[in-house]
Image (tube, rainbow, N blue to C red; front, side):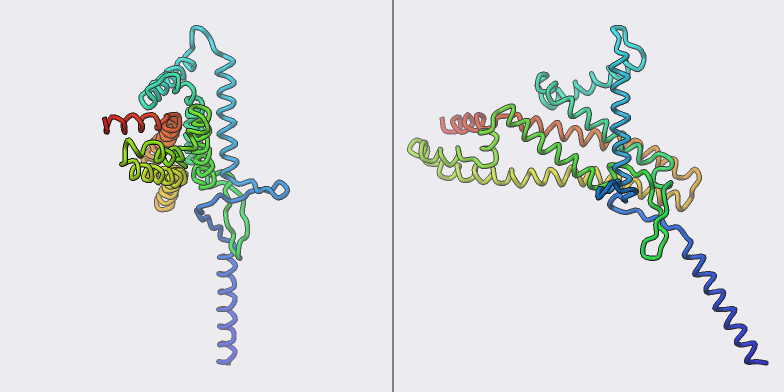
Length: 304
């Protein structure tokens, strides 16, 4: 009789363990990852949730630009007046960086597009449902929630692509503005090495100055890669940290408490978009300047 009771108790414990494990297997886990998660496939091309958000940002910009362009009037309405104030203020801010209205007008369209693209992506990432509504996928025996939407700038791939566009675009703009040879000499300063043979009799210090100038050009090449890294990781880090903060606050106390942090992330989204676009403007401005003439003039004045 005692053996029968022991066997019955063991069977009950096994059934209870199976029920618990079955209940745990149905739990849905949501992990915040550094990279975007694929939600669909087109042939071998993955469609990620951050890519969908970026497409949404582009669509919003396109629709907004279309309606603004279609409804332009000599006597502006409220919406047109608002955007004219924003554009005029942004152009004046660009003038403070370039000190040249013509140069500002050339760079401004790309910079303002980057600003609004980054801003909308930042804000779409904190909308209700972004990061919380999605599909369930099984991964290593666990049920993971894969959200349909995720802030585009919370994906390192998006910020890296934007940084590459900004840095390469600045160099292309420099070639178009000051010429390919002068732009090449910013990085591989053959003119500095050549000046050793032409100016060594008049100025023997050129033997020291020219190699240093050439080495500075090599450092500029490293600096271009550093620009890509700093631009991409600064934007990604701030936006991703904001999403983690909101998720943590919502997990601890889901009501009322996350609201102040939500408004804080709205402000952070504006600041990060402004920083990224302003740095892009600075890179374009530097690329459009011819430093070789200034260096020669300063060197001649120093030995006059």
